[in-house]
Length: 304
Image (cartoon, rainbow, N blue to C red):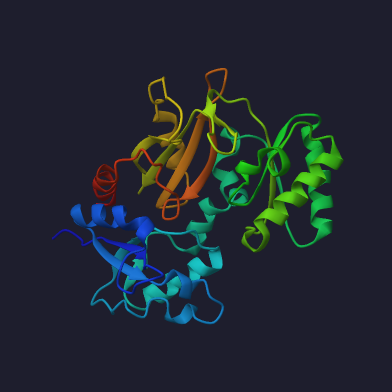
């Protein structure tokens, strides 16, 4: 007998027992491809005083079954709460808390991809002193250009003021940009700040709203060490080249301690491919060009 597979989605913040509108297309595709669906309240889970009731409408299952979350990003602590709460109801998320953080936080994922990703230094953010420590670590880049982000997200749309620094040795500019990044991320800042070597990537186009340069990037999804698919990352720009050979990245994926994750890769101007970062597959967004129905069809194949 085939194991029943479940997908967990966020409930609409405006209507109970209805999927969040931003995930409605995925909800429909999951059901059409044979997944059972569950809903929980994201707002409750991420609240300081209501997290314990986030899954109150999910009933106890008779036997332990696997469930994949597809929804908004969670901190490792929030994910751990969700994981343990679901477990009491006989639903086991595909990744445990450690496996989630392995790909969700850039510093945790470096042990799997360090040899194929741009040079990176990082520092947990606690106060102004943390910025000074990070600037000291950034001396490793010399006069090279660098990119800034927190452990999960960047502020790409504030490219010149909070993301890109043309010369890492310009400590005044570097400090201003890091400070601006912290200000923009505010309460959503993920744990700490990472400084990464800027690598020249193959140009695609210029973002129509932010003016940010878009480059030839792809998002791969892996489930149970098997490739679900490779997809164009950006919705803008024309991908003129054929999709890259994924053989090497499939080998790397087998070493990643996660059961469901994304891998973003990019083509450099010299034609070589690099890994930009990993992400937990449950909170990694689906690029706009992805056929949702095809994605869930392939996901189910890899899950079985």
